[in-house]
Length: 396
Image (cartoon, rainbow, N blue to C red; front, side, top):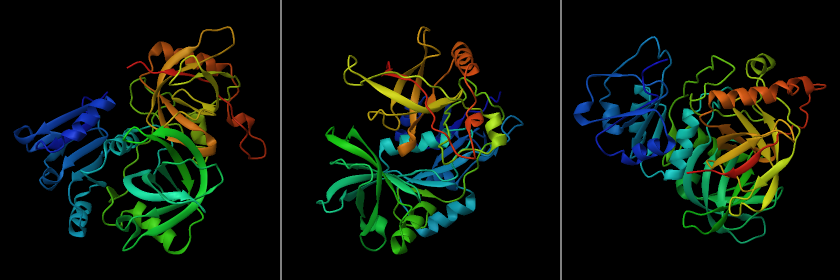
């Protein structure tokens, strides 16, 4: 096992907010400042974060046989202009992050970068955090927030809910729309209750953008490819993806993100990272009232995570406790987990956190009694998948 840190943070005191977030995530990190930064420093395993000044004066990164992979390199800065972007690209920086990026967006961004499991996304959900106008067609527009964006979908925070299938209007400000405001339209995939940053009731809404055409399609592509000046997270180069070496995740190996149905791996990869059907229903405890229960239905189960559907309270980044049952009369295996991704109609992906050897053996025992997911496919079509989990309040 490598002695190198997972994350290396280099700055002169201006990245305290990034430091606080790494501590909050429980990341394996080292922070070097000022004179602590020598001419040669040990290369991190996964992620290098540096201020602009330290990026332009980067020390030599010393690697060993235990750290054969190149880390993702993030530069955090308060300005954004084309000459700077080109210089950073030439240095090999993968992302430029504006220092004004809000803490929630920063947290989700770092979680994505630290994920090392199978089927890693080549294209991240780009955290934006910009104010927008939004509303369903024929309704009055309200002020909301564009949380994240890919070429195919976006997640917004809106004061009002929207039914799945309804057409949502999202008006981007000039900073994101180009030289003028730009309207995007797409069907709502999912709407869940949440809170705004001010603590007011709001709704997290996932909108699909795969039907965009013309300038709307071109502008979304410019945003996610890093061509638009003014975004708070800018991709500068394709990030390196690490190939998992084993099917069984290490208990403390970091973030494990189950793949979406759309990102399902080919058969050879499924054999290395098997998933199982799990047909049971259990209670889901309400986060605000532990005496009130609901039902959570999942999609699939693996040694590293689970996907569940039917619980509207689960938001991306939420810390929860899962109880997985092997039978109605048996005690469940109880694990802490993080909500990693909202897959719309395909459910919500959760990852198990810090799985102990005992818990891992319990999960393996459950899975050993279940049919593999791929064996249930007929005619190349994906069957309905059900996983059962009990969700309880996380202990902090």
